[in-house]
Amino acid sequence: MTSEKNLDRRQLIKSRTCWALIVITMLLMGAAWAETLIDYDHRKKFPAYRTHSWGRFETDDYICEQRIKNALDRQLTAKGWKQVPSGGEVSVSVIGITHPDQTVHVTGSGWG
Image (cartoon, rainbow, N blue to C red; front, side, top):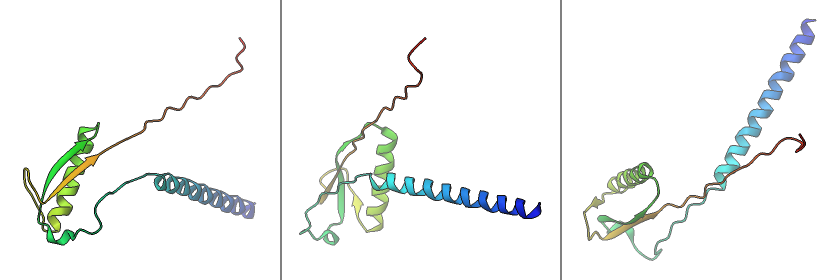
């Protein structure tokens, strides 16, 4: 009886491990589909620049806007750049686009 319990327990552990791997794989696949586009002139020497100002910033989410601005400001400050109100050597523009999807699940036979 003990060996049957051990066998059942091992099968349960294998099953849970398998499902965990499937879930992790699905999450990684979903993250891989996220698209980020970065556009800049590859001929420019960015280490020569020291100031930046905010240009066009379009997003539907104010909280997201603040998070993006804070993250970019931290990164640029760490590289020795200084933010100026306007007229910086580099103008940083951000356009956030989301595509909300709606899923409809229909169940039932339709009779009744």
